[in-house]
Length: 118
Image (cartoon, rainbow, N blue to C red):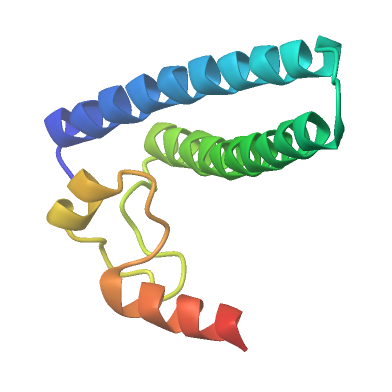
């Protein structure tokens, strides 16, 4: 992969990383505010609990994405970016444009997802 392409993906990944950090910080602030709210009845408690569960799931998913982004940024610095972790072939440019922190090529992604289902 050419240096200009690596720089393109590095910028993309760093921008997404900042966005996720901002999102996580905002959600954590909202959750903190929810904990401070005075709940008047069971309905308020259920609504608050449901919202907290959803927000926690979102944070968890974004933290996972953040780890994948950090891994991809490390791969860029080690000149290992864009290589499938399973078959070691190149990951297609178009795939990386859609998901710059992709770990697998399209074929191996399908295998990895099927393995998770079992």
